[in-house]
Amino acid sequence: MAHPHDTPMVFVVGIIGNIASFICFLAPVSTFYRVCKKKTTEGFQSVPYVAALFSAMLWIFYAYIKTGEILIITINAFGCFIETVYLSIYLTYCPKKARIFTLKLIFLFNLAGICLVVVLTHVLAKERTARVELLGWICVVLSTSVFAAPLSIIKVVIRTKSVEFMPFTLSLLLTISASMWLIYGILLGDIFVTLPNIVGITFGTIQMVLYAIYMKSTPVKNQKLPEHNDELNVNTQEVIPPSVVDIETGGEKKEGMHVQLPEKKQSQTEHNQLQQHN
Image 1 (spheres, rainbow, N blue to C red):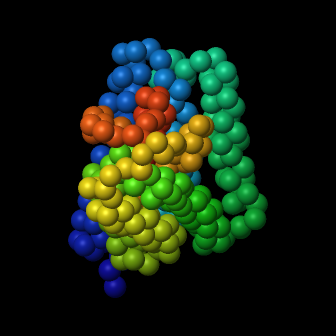
Image 2 (image 1 turned 90 degrees about the horizontal axis):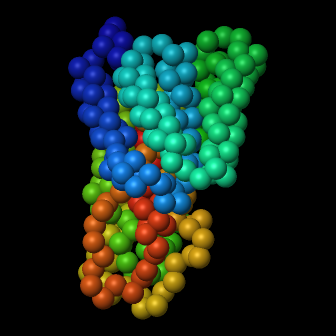
C-alpha cells in the first residue's frame, strides 16, 4: 500500500501550500526596504518576527522527528532564513532599548526555548511516536494561539466600521494558504497540521466577511483607536507550516476618513496582519 506522501495529490497540495506560504513570508519586504531607506524602524515591534522564527524552527523539528515531511521542512527553512534577515535589519536600525529587548526575546525563544523543547521531547518521550505526538501538540498550541490573535483587529473593524487596517488581499491569501495546509494535513491524516489551520481558515473567513460588510460603510466619526497599539499589534496570523508573517499595504487613506492612526502604528498594524502560516 502506497504511503500518503507518495500520492500525487498530497505532493501537489503541499507545493501549492509552499507557494502560498512563500508569498506570505515575502509580504514584509516592502516594509523592511523602507526601514533600510529611512534607517529607522519607525516604532515597529519585533515580536511578530521573533514568534515567526520560533514557530518555523518548531515545525522543522517536528518534520525532522516525524520524517518524510520534506515539504514542511522546505517552507519553514525559508521562513527561518527570511525571518532572520528581517530581524537582522530590525536590530540594525531599531533604538537601543528595542534592540536589547529583541535580543532578550531571541535568546529566550529562539535559543533557550528551542533547546528546552528538544531536551523535553527526548526526556519525556522515549519512543519516536511519542516524541512526534508531544512536539505536535506543542506546535498546535503555539499555532492556534497565533491564529486567534486577529480577534483584536476584528474588534477594531466592528467598532470603527472601517476596513482600512484589514486588507482583503492579505486575508484572502492567508485563508488560501491555511486551506492548502488543512487539506495537506487531512490527506496525510496529520491532526497536528490540520487543527491549527481550521482555526486559521475560520478567522480568515470572518475577516473577509467583515470586509464585505464594511467596505462601503462610513467609518465612525472621531472614533479613536487605542492610544497604545496593543490591540492592533497582536494581529498576527500563522499558516502551518510557515509561521508568523507580516505585510504592509501601502494604500492611501480615503478622503473624509476620520479614523486616524499615526503612521508608525498603522505600519505596525499592517505588519502584524499576516502571521497565518503553516
